[in-house]
Length: 268
Image 1 (cartoon, helix red, strand yellow):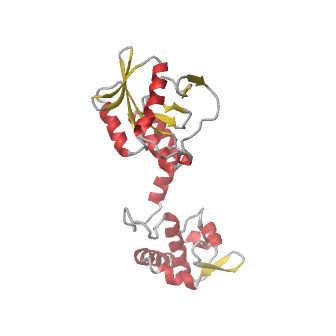
Image 2 (cartoon, rainbow, N blue to C red):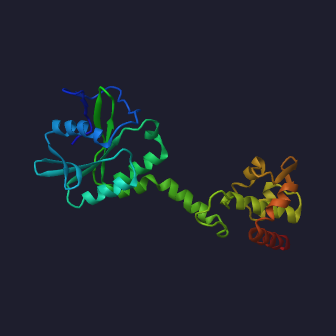
Image 3 (tube, rainbow, N blue to C red):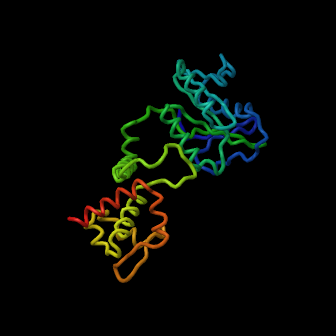
């Protein structure tokens, strides 16, 4: 199959076009079976012999001994994805067909589901539904998934994740928690700076770095003052704010650790 052509079903005529604006379906009052005719004509034009509802498969098509299965659904969800993976046991090629979404086509959820389909080597067909004009198109083919290429695209994210992990002193979050303030590496750095200021009074970024705070981010954390924990005393000199004194002790384990670390640095 090829995704370079779009086939329009007008009732009696199939038109082939490589260009033009592809309309999305805004009419929610449709049945799953309304997807069938545009897909039938799409596959028929490519030379497939098509039959519907064969051994519980929505659409089964054969061409040169290649068995192609299409599972239709009103929305792209995990149920139809599971159904499609089961069809891969006996079919050469498997597609999922759904109505073409509007704005959701660019949503994070849609992109994630599309990635899952590509990972599973399942193709995706989109059907635009209109009263006088309906047509099917291939969003992507079920080609072999390139795992190395996928990992290559995630190198930056991997580097950031490992850096964040290694920048934390301990594990102070609960996995799966929502609606809670998370202890990030950035917040932990701010706690470290706050503890140094509590212990030693006003300091400049250079003095803080000598006490072990992050060499690259100390000045930025003080200047941006994201949590409102710091106050500028004079040019390049900072102290802890009243808000900082109250809030930093809420992180008890980190507070005790960095206060102890500040004591050690003082004694050196």
